[in-house]
Image (tube, rainbow, N blue to C red; front, side, top):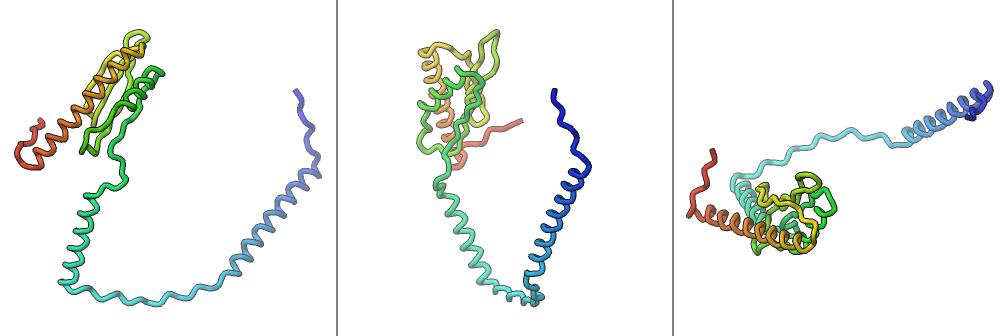
Amino acid sequence: MYCPPLASGWMLWFRALAGWGLLAVALGALAGRADAQPAKRPAQARKAPAPLPPAQLEEALRLLLKADSVSRRRTGTEAAGLVLDQALTKPGHDFYDLFYNSFEAPAGVADFTVQVGERPGRGNSSLIVLTVNDQELLEAPLPTRLDQMEELVAGAVEAAQGYLLEAQNVSRQLESGRRAPLEVY
């Protein structure tokens, strides 16, 4: 193992003086820049604007609420839904890819989250878990053969679409007032 010889005393002093010199030059430049800035004028006291008459204030608030409610109706370019890959293994990612390519949200369904996850199973196997809007819909052993995986994907897509349609129907019924909300204990 090679160890370089220690620097002699004069080299250390030279490096230290060079470092202090650079520091002094930098501080001088900063001080010169601070002197070059123009002095700020004292702020003049501003008068507060006169308050609006009640009729104009009410009209302004009405317009603001109207504009806010119109902007809520238009979703624009926001994402309609989210499909997340929470798989851990290669077969799990393959299942997600097949699911993502075949899943299409039902018409009119906007806000949803679909998670394709994976849990360890017995031995070397794993379980595929499909969760829609925090509701676990499917937990099945993850097949390794492609044809079996495609069958499982078809069932998972059908389950997710059915759940989203049912949630949309319940939401519409609750909004129209024809159905009482489910009681939660």
